[in-house]
Length: 113
Image (cartoon, rainbow, N blue to C red; front, top):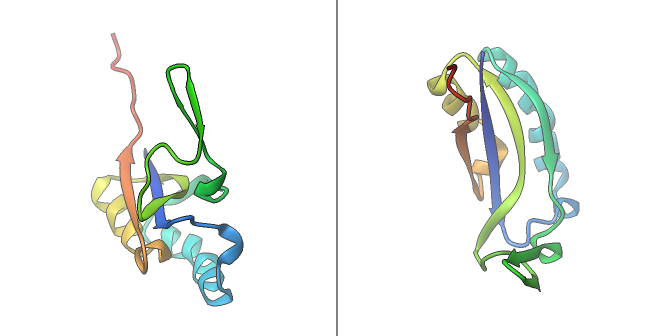
């Protein structure tokens, strides 16, 4: 099966400790919904709030995110799905789409020589 990175965007600073019990319940149901559509979550990670980020540009190191934004990357997971259409259907069910959004990107596979 093809693999996709699903990037989770939430309103800044996207602190995972601020999730409501109702939202956590939606997250708990999500893996079952993924499997019903023929996909599988391989691994996933929540990120610390964007306020904990350190940006590096050449030799310049600054506290804070790379760019200021209303929505920030809050986490990501690797999804296995039969095809991009299925991956997008799975992404549409993600609770992050309620007040943020998700981005689905195929993982790069080097061409066979």
